Figure 1 (spheres, rainbow, N blue to C red):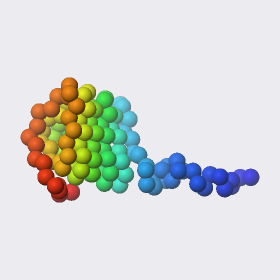
Figure 2: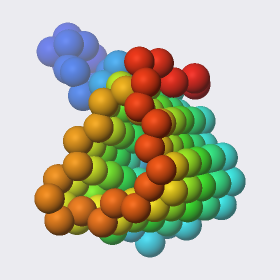
Figure 3: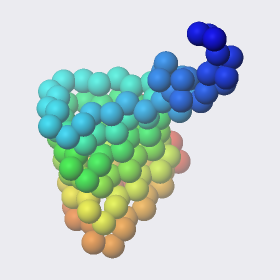
Figure 4: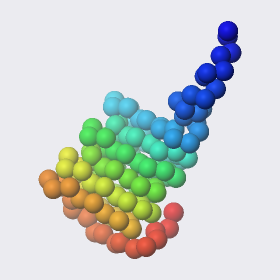
Length: 128
């Protein structure tokens, strides 16, 4: 009745508790100045100045802005990034993105229309 067994297999319950597949989110209107360390994927729709270390995927939404350094497994940029990117696997730059600085990645995808002014180093392995 109160402890229904059907909720025990709910995948959203595990995500809410910080399990695999969990997504952290910084919403539009939020400003962060400092360092973020994330074990799971993170989406930034607000503004951040500082360092972002993520063991999963970083997504900068269309309204998101980061000025600083990102270290992550994968990244998708739809908003604004200025600084240094260290991406171990795939970096995707979408058509709405504006990226300036330095990137270090294994694989790179830049959509037509993106503003992309960087110094790039591509290698098999970046240091995290």
